[in-house]
Length: 245
Ligand SMILES: [Zn+2]
Image (cartoon, rainbow, N blue to C red; front, side, top):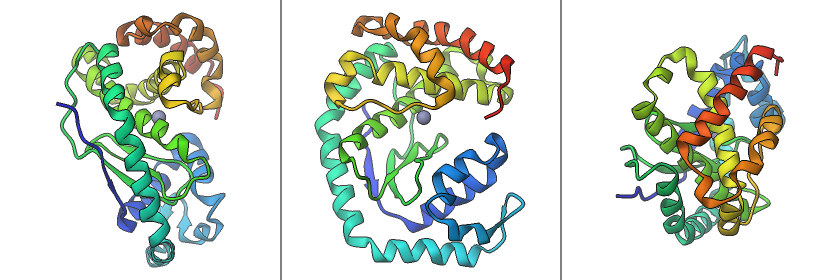
């Protein structure tokens, strides 16, 4: 059974993800918080102090106002995203089965929520994620959905087959592996034929992707174990070099 992604608009979900950007800012020296939120919504600076939301009322009103003003455009865009995803989901699930040897999809809500933030978070626990309420290149949205869905499958596969990674101390390590994994898969020729847009990558992963890209050109080469085996030592090395973000 393949999960059917549902599309929803919820200001409350976006307020919650604002909270997670703020709460996790230490993780990357605030980079995601700046990229995703403060660059576009500088007014929200006043709601944050020392890694906490100090003015929740202001933040909630700010987000809800944007939702109220953009209700029409939000539903129009979410409908289009759903239509576009439905056209690609069949082939996406088949290609994903090949990579993960038919590993079953983990249970979860599989809801794509709109977001006004500039980065699109995922929530591994309940299998929800966010897509931009408004985006210039709408053809890119199916790529972001495929990207988040691959994360859900990747983590389910690792949980089952790589118990040594379960330790929370491996969280950041695993995050690097899964991001690089996604780029190698989605930017491979067979996937580009389907999605037609390149997945953007984190700058710190560029070197590893360039090193491995050639090996993963053929669809038959895209195998989860092989990818994990190849990416693992390079991420380990990168983390030992410890360049600050
Ligand atoms: Zn990702």
